[in-house]
Length: 85
Ligand SMILES: [Zn+2]
Image 1 (cartoon, rainbow, N blue to C red):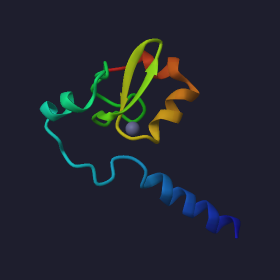
Image 2 (cartoon, rainbow, N blue to C red; image 1 turned 60 degrees about the horizontal axis):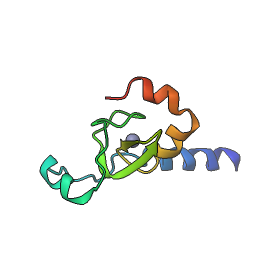
Image 3 (cartoon, rainbow, N blue to C red; image 1 turned 60 degrees about the vertical axis):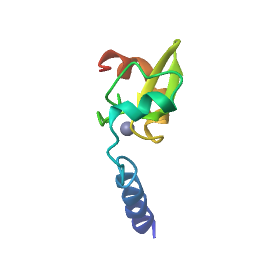
């Protein structure tokens, strides 16, 4: 029973990031977001940033590739800020 639950969780996690993400040209991003992220790569898993998924940290707008990466970042922001690109 427990083993079944575990594998279901793993599948959910694996499907989390970068699923069915349409490749959008950078030019459309500027019209959607009032504050643009300072980074171009998701600090958590280094995918391209989705400008709709942002989090304000120390007055800086941090972009993420998907919403699941935000709580990861919140767990240890300093670690991720170090290699922000
Ligand atoms: Zn991500």
